Image (cartoon, rainbow, N blue to C red; front, side, top):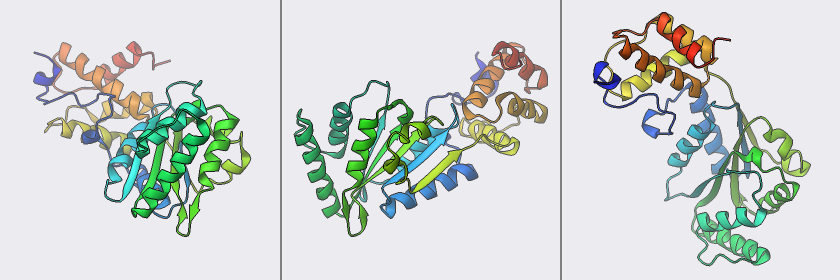
Length: 271
């Protein structure tokens, strides 16, 4: 027996792997999706989402990508995995994701192919959207200038391509490398931590998706989870997962404050 069987769950409810089934549509997330879709649908060109580590930026990016149906949007999500990315590598990725058939190794030819593809997408009545996660890693003035160059492409309806940048607070400094680009931000969203009420609803939602029909966490336990995690979704997940394991090991039908204090100590969150 493991904690799934003990608590009558069908799957692990607090994995930090992004899974749209567990998406919690908090008021903040709902508002963010609406604002970002507005930016895309009106072809504003550039929107930015900033949040601290574990605030839910990647989850929001994946949710937005799901909202952009293939009939009306040509959308791609790129995740920057290291800071040494070159503009050539980046634009080759853009080209592939946007459907350029022959991707040139020559940068000028590559940009020409991207421009041509953007016009094709526009002629098809679609909107081109490039979502980029961890953009704070692109500490390059050259790349910021290249983004601005792509945003110079316009039709009568607006920008030919829409960028949505997701990143840590340092993204502000990265975009400041090219002040004209920074001034083109049409929509800017700052994700904040969950409130205590949101934390409780978030936990309840994820347990419900995993088949839970009872109150596994006491009100006192949820209050402590909020205090130790500061309302950060990733930390909430980690604490709850560990608490379920701890509760199972000590055969506690309800997770109480003592379990949360033990977990917080184990994770070093009680300092």
